[in-house]
Image (tube, rainbow, N blue to C red; front, top):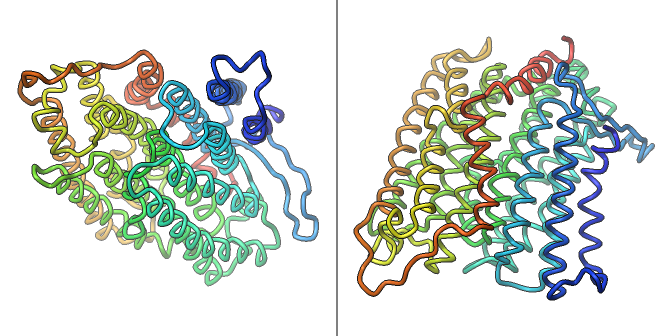
Length: 517
């Protein structure tokens, strides 16, 4: 188990280095480009198998205990350690990251985005995977920061070199926002480490803030929270996200929504909640207020983009929907209750599955039509997707109803638990304020249903195909291979939520109790 977790973190970096080397003559296939793309599929596939083996070997009877741990001294002067481990909170995120990266590599093997050499593309994809996996596996604050920052460079180049129109400006905005947020976050992490005398996240969580004064906790949570809020993204620090998603290639959007946004909310749960509980308690109502505002704002922005004549980009609409969905995650965390935090973690996974599928589908539509403009997709050349490409239309409708939180699908449970927790927040929080936040969240669910059903009606339910219009290619075999796991897991998580909640709940209970249970 120790070896498996270390392998999962290190193997993508080794794979990235190997991708830049010339392919052996016997493995080139039809071309060197095909060889390096096959290399990407192989490496990400091996890492996915390793995470599945890690999940299979995980002690499910004790999900609150850190397992597969490695603890090696690295920088003695600062007491920085290479400390790795996995529990019921981080295990689902590791598997989700490995799965989405593999599906993106598989998709790219058949549909490589236009841009420079595939060598650089595959290497950057693997470096991105290494950073995200490390973020969920490390248990040292300094290592967490390094892993958190490691993903910025590969995502910047994936957007700037393989993206669409406005890609350079969008990539620049992405890295500027996240770097500025990370600088503030680093100050908060250093403050905790210096005042507590250790950067070890397990020791700090067990201490549960007893070695930190209230003012130190408040300052640390404020600084760390700002950095995490940018990555989440929390309204009003979200403005980099729509531009980045609109410009990014399909696989870049899938990984940005499905994995990178989760790093911010994971930081709140793993660091802010257990290490600085008093500071988190002070700032929780403000976090909840911003979360509720983001839910309503994201939904209204999507409604504006979905209306006829607005020239709304479908990728941009889904990006704004992420602001709303991640608002539910933040609201659940801000209740400071086991119910809310479990709901937040469930919504994290559900959003990764459903929004990843949505971006895959919109990318397929854009490949077929040459645009993601809703007015064009809903016009003479794009209407009646059910009639022209029934499987593609059915998948789009499925992803839409899953995203709006239809009971029986993954999107329902996390948002429901977050709202339920807001009805009865932790002791000491203003219940009247949280009832308002709950009502705003409920309004957001109605608005979400409105804009997603509007998208389905406009894109899928138009008139017959105009005379002379060419046939539209339906779902291709490689697309079916990349999308089927996301559909299956969305249904599984919706019908059997105990699979995920059984992992997270004991770990959350112990985390909130400061490791005393």
